[in-house]
Image (cartoon, rainbow over all chains, first blue to last red; front, side, top):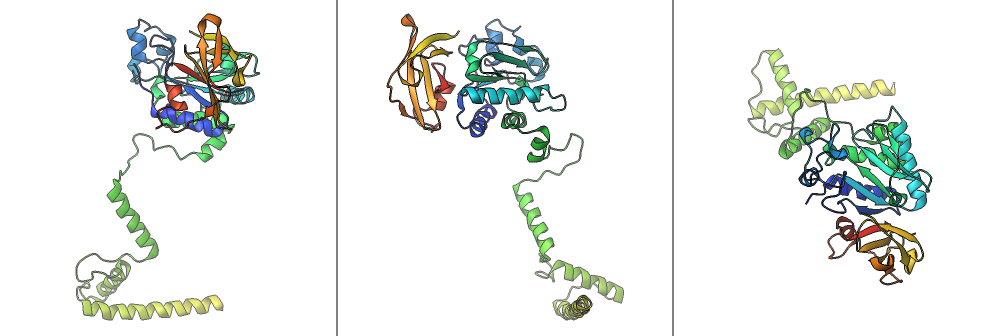
Length: 266
Length: 82
């Protein structure tokens, strides 16, 4: 037996969105002893096919940390014109040395002209053929290491959409930071607190949460403390004194605002 | 293993078909939301339509019988209707 990854199912949904007449045709192998990417690594090995071509290259070997139970190919059925369209888009991306969107995939089989089947090995660059069922369904296989990888799915879907690599980059979320870059990981509560603080700071409404100045806007308290420090008095700890100082600050700010308005109008 | 035969009735009438699965195939027309079931008759190498008028296509993957389930199983192939 084997498993079907959520990423492959998502690929089928995105493919159908992109090509309105396309139909998800399958993932599972035609039998548990079938060769190639449709079958899982464990099924291949257990049926004496450990030398199958889909287990040999970098990203396909069991030692690479692949999901050994996963079926790793998808078939999408399309009409003749869509088969030609999609196959040509994949072929064009494959042949572009500056386009890495197929780098995590192994093979594609379709038809460039509606009459002949074209096999494309994205890893070796080999061009070939396959059986005529690929005149009405496109096969995408491997690499096994990326069968659960949504980034590789999105890259492939971008190709069949007809996007250029530059368009794909501009429409994709930025890649995650590379390993080694210091990051702060936020859980949901921390993220919510951070969002609150950013919003509060931007709006200037963040208030003190405790102590004698509880409820007062932080930036006012900080300014008053700075003024008191310059005057040689103790930092604000008294509510009445705070109110008195606030009124003075408000008066200063109002004066500054009127001066500013006068300068603008002048 | 591939199963080769000629379609009888429905949208594949007279069309040579290759199915990858032994019981036959499901022909799907998503734009009009219809499907047709073809059963493979190996002795005469024909895929015979069950109902030439077809059925409403079931896209709901939680339904007991739906097109995605057919694609995920290994009895009927699924292909676009011509």
